[in-house]
Image (cartoon, rainbow, N blue to C red; front, side, top):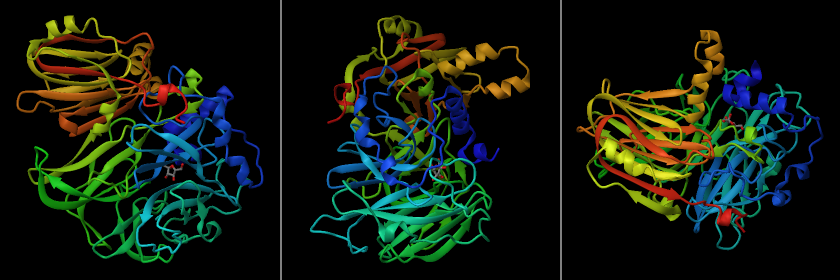
Length: 542
Ligand code: FRU
């Protein structure tokens, strides 16, 4: 089915469920009226106090979100824009929602920044600070914030409530703000700055998700564009001096490339995380296939084969432009938590911000992710086990711990041949000495697995049990992991972020325990920080 192909199987499944549950967005084909999409003033009837509202993962006050968009920092504020359906709980009516934060942990949602217009919708894109006033729109000393989005005119299936266009076509447009992101104007009435590149590249013309950034060495703006569904793998690089006129600089074909391509320069660290004084460019797509190489302002040259960094629910991630402190922080869409089944007023969430690093490891450089240190502002109660005690004794001491949301770090030295199981509110993380692997299955999938026992392979496929095995996690005789547990997700960082598994899971409300059972191990250290809510008093962030 075309729709499921376009929006991805998981999102399609949720949408189908929403339609069945009768809570999906209205389907009537209406004429374009942007006022119908500025629904934010009407979000006053909800707070942040629902029992399944994630405490420290971003959600919109109301309604559907998917990709993070336009991540940028300017004058003390991080701006997070996101694909947002302002009218309902399923994908559609794409608008750029908006939130700001001083620390990437506590967010305040603002009115939607870019609304649908004409027959089309603003799809994903990125944002920059126009330091040199290239666009010529600056007012006073305040720099202009510039967002580049894909304008999606698509007559296939259902995109939202606007009357369908007669043609399917995408182009790249710009919206800008001269008041620190409080209001946005469409450049040239929302017309193209990068026109559709022609059907010879992608017969459907679906080119989208521009990554925009300033390339200091050539003193030019660069836009990187993924070019379509049917011509899988086309990426085109453009340059510009004024953000309005764009020239094709080069083209790359990578069969792995699909949606939301990002290009960012990162310092290379050694295995212990110390800078080596060199930098490389990271090119990745929305499904987090990546290559590392050089970029001269026009052309990307790969220096090592593609690798995939996607484990679990992790999509369409992008990095902040104009970061104030040299860190590269990434946020992705963390899809598939079934909040709608719990009758929440919002659906979908974003991953917790993490620093992105490249570390030299033999001949390759590897990608590392690690939660930003600002998470510590949410630390409430803390527990630590005495160092170097056995698994059995650790389990006895954990008996009193009850946590709903936590930042848990463990380092252990496996002993013997029996599997050791960390039960985290019903989700199971199992270390298997036989192949030195960690296996993760969420509590929801544990339940599913029980329910499907004995079913035919076809039924099993339909019911899809998600579980993950990460091999060879034993390093210098120990295994280290850190896990962020929220009401709608678990984010697992193994060996300092060398492997990351991001998983949507809604744990049962009454299960707040952590246990260690099975085999032997020396638990060298185990620390739990209970996390409080990032939403002020769980009420609206006024
Ligand atoms: C990725 C994506 C983008 C597109 C957006 C639409 O999840 O499909 O390619 O711009 O979502 O919401």
